[in-house]
Image (tube, rainbow, N blue to C red; front, side, top):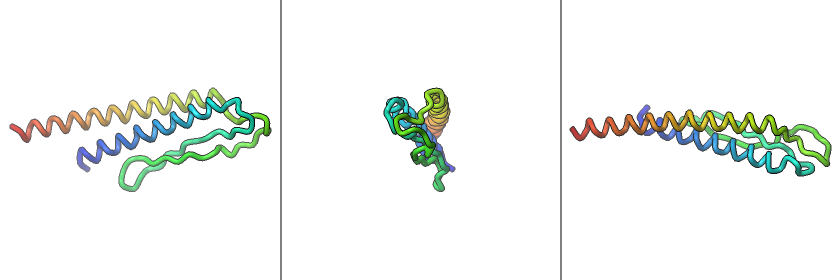
Length: 108
């Protein structure tokens, strides 16, 4: 696996965590909307490396005049997305540093 592949995988992870955070934000925004069904982001490994995401409704049953959004769960999901994004950003930065070192070796 080359450095460019590592960078692409890290970007894929950052995009996946961004989508997860967006889904949580949407859930929080609609928490008081009658009949709203919570959205859930699922992660899956991509065959070519990286991560793919899909968003689906929770499928939980609730009263038609309420939503099934748990604000505590949304906070946990947001924190998890933040940590995942930071981890992938660190991988990307390390890969970029490695790329710079290789470029300087090639110039010398």
